[in-house]
Length: 503
Ligand code: NDP
Ligand code: HEM
Image (cartoon, rainbow, N blue to C red):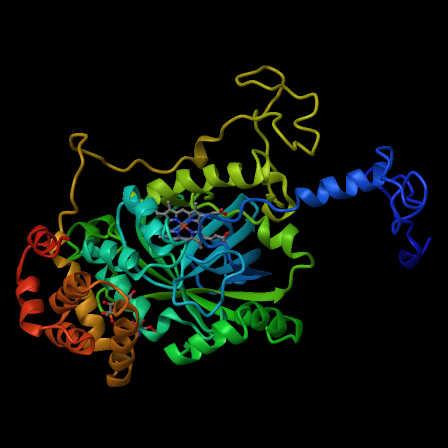
């Protein structure tokens, strides 16, 4: 039978005779329980929604490939990076962070930049953002931070008090806040933004030498941002503008691409480095660690079914291949737990069998068994324990990462370079931004922070003042605050400032 004439069936393939009229007792009577098709149809509809992602709920995805353009075998033994010209299939998902599944693409928010490489050694996920830094540097703060970006528990409304109260009491956020409130906080499209690992990862080569690295996917379309006014307009007029833009560009053959540049430090260089290389609130200045071009990412195929391929896509920073490892960054360590854990909640324990998540070129081979929705043969009749003498899969020591030296007492530690939190956002404001970019930054902040209580405005303006006196002064003036009071608060320690601005 041709595609067009396929008979309608139940979920189990039985032909359906009538899909317009329920089975009733007489023409005006109640529906009969024996109308199995109606029960099945309603029952499935009732269960169509799965939990949305707790963050990054709104997003768009596409397939493509990554091509190696420079020899990096001295730094990593990852096979997909082993030779120039080598291509690996990729699935990418871009997203906003705080909003719900139906929220506007133009929101001021970091953008997720998640890549899944289907390599011959299993899947490798690079789960980054369009910002090189982040708001906090210890995973223990993440749930609190995210709550402040969501809705007020009483009013169910976004709440500038919650947002700025937390950020101003967490001054390590100043760098990311400065990036977010620049026009880069509202990229024109997903195609016009960079993607960064933000974290430091570890690469290691076949000889066991290791390196600290950061990834920068630089857009070949050029950086293009929305102004605050443009983003406000688009949020109402076309809440899906970036989703549409990505789909249309690929459908028209205008394939977006990014050039991967890596920053690489040897462990010796890292020891004497000015910045704590594990602190995600810091960048590695380009002048000190020049990025090297390594490859190209191209997206050239749209998904066919959004739910199957994009909504069910599941990334995890712990999905690594030999040659790539995580670092002891306290955020990254926590992320390795959180993603797998949330996927089990959102998609079930066998989410790795969903086609978009499946390791295509190096299938699963282990002793994990059963669970909800185990839809393959579940390991068939093979042994389900290790060690065994039935020829089951065995670990390969070559897949182990080289040891890293660790030391110290188990305790709750502050970052050693705590006092430097304001230098890099100050550099961004003073040295990188143009007059126009600074003006937009201050305008964007004043517009948003203006909704918070005055004592919170003063505390946050003082944080900006610590980054740069002109920056803090302009924000304070824009908000109509007493600049001397802001200066006084800026001179205090974080604890004193918090006490001086408490309710
Ligand atoms: P550089 O002058 O070498 O680099 C400045 C970088 O800033 C460029 O990569 C540019 O990206 C980027 N940039 C420009 N405007 C903004 C903005 N509004 N928000 C975020 N990034 C922006 O300087 P350094 O490496 O010495 O770093 C100076 C500051 O630049 C840092 O403190 C940091 O805030 C920012 N930065 C640094 C990065 C790094 O890895 N070193 C990465 C991104 C930002 P592009 O080339 O795409 O225009
Ligand atoms: C999504 C946790 C920090 C990038 C998520 C999700 C969780 C989470 C639970 C939802 C996953 C899902 O349901 O599929 C955390 C925690 C963090 C953290 C606990 C702090 C330690 C970061 C950072 C980045 C990042 C620093 C970027 C550098 C992303 C991206 C997604 C995501 C891109 C969306 C992935 C997708 O497209 O499906 N995060 N996150 N996160 N996170 Fe994080």
